[in-house]
Image (cartoon, helix red, strand yellow):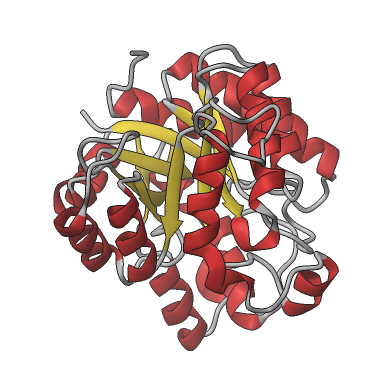
Length: 330
């Protein structure tokens, strides 16, 4: 049985505040823990009015402190925005506070615009050093070596599990070379999914962290009591993706009755391409809809995003999904 996990962007819905989004993230994590989900990840984004997880390590501490068994982590930290030393200290501290519960997914993209990149005081070429930064970060989180002069305290010897996140072939190759688990961001950029997974498995080299390839596949899933209600709830991420195409991002919009009145044919094609790994349905139908993705990718784990405007409907969606997929605590 494939493992299920939750990716939460701490979406700020229209009519709501960042405080609402962060409170909802913790509440969702608590319900996900009770439903048997494996992980709860938050993602780093900056300068976006609709996402409240910019200070990702702080958000992780908030969620981990209010839960007890579910793994909590970053999906991911955009490493080019930070020095490896700072991330080692942050996640080493988290691992010290919450032993054996913290994950650290790493992305190569800045996750923001050029203006914000300058505000973060990082160079435009920072992403070019991503492989070296990952190796440095892994060393800082590992056991201290003889004559080592730089120590992350807390951090060293916490051996926080690292993941490589990606939406291209670069991340797949790096994860394979370093022997790290690989998570593909097919929930918003699915085009290279199959090729990336194939390359990762073919080139995988075992490491101290991981003996065999481990693939996590991102997807959007909306489940409701009826097919029609799930279809309606799904119009929120459809509107979000359309706004990305238009360059007019904002807060997460409430669902609408007819998405065809919202987008043009060209916008529909672009947004639908971004949402190719997206599924909606009832508890009785969603499993069959997800099965082809699981079979095609051989995914060990699904990282499920659910951008649903109404928080109670979002919690209900994740609970219905867990029941439909037979998810239980291990």
